[in-house]
Structures are given as C-alpha cells and as structure tokens.
Image (tube, rainbow, N blue to C red):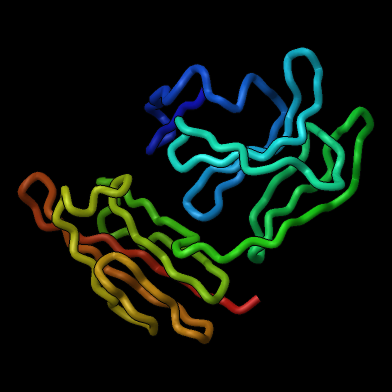
Length: 196
C-alpha cells in the first residue's frame, strides 16, 4: 500500500495494491519530482534487485534492474551530487559496499511546500549549484490562494514561482503574499545556494 500526507498527521491511502508488489526492507528516495524504490525482500524471502519510479505514488514504472550489484534489502538509497547512491544492505550476508548511478540534473530538484499556518516564518533550504527551485504553497495550490512571490533580497531570478540561483554561492529571500480568511498574509523562504 501507498499513503501520503501533507502534514504528517492526516494520511490518505493512494493505493492498497501498488504494482511494485508486496515488499519490505526496501529503500526510497525522491529525485526529479519522482519517488524511487529500490530492492527489498518479498514475503517469501526473495531478495529484489528492481528499481521503480512514480510521480504520484499510484502509477509505478519499472525503470531497471541492478547491474553488477547483488539483489538486496535493508540498504540505504540517497540522492546526492547528481547521483543516486546505494549503500550497504543485506543480500544474505551484511554488506558494506557503495554503488552509485549518474543522473541528469532535474529541472526542479527541490519543491518547497509551505503550509497555511506559516506566517512571517522563514523556511530555509540549502541547495547545490546549479539549482532551480519551484516554490509551492500548501501542497502546490499557489493559484487557489492567489499567492504572489517576489525576490526580496539576494541574487538570481524569479519567474512566477520558479527561482533560479545565480552562478555563484548566494542567499536569496523570497516573499510570498497571499489572502487567507479575508486577511493579507506573507511568508518567506530563504534559499541558500552553495558550491560543493
């Protein structure tokens, strides 16, 4: 099954029969506005070496199988420095190997979601250059609240709700103005771009 939440308190079931099949001890990461699931173990103790992706949690596409690496469970999967990394795990015996796959930089590597209760609160996000950020209000409903973003300070450019960092390290503050319960409110996002 697959569940999602925008606040960690209220959860909605997306599906109780995902095409990835029953599995446990898999790893999950987010990259390029998609969820990625790698490996795991079936209820019959079969180790898995498959890689799946989904942009909504409901529809899953099998992307590939491991190449050269053993099927495994209980491993770590992370996205770092434009690579997907698989670290350690268990393929019948505990492993301490590290594998990676080169990835293309996504158009929007980070989505910053702001809740309706964040008023005059700065949300900070640190990103690796080059980077572009799509700022989404309340789970992506910018239009529903009529929010307008402006670049308050720092370099880079802002086009609607899409911020592109400058070529050099910088800190930018974005201010969003919106109406809620007939009140005009503002929220801030601080984007820190660094060279690694």
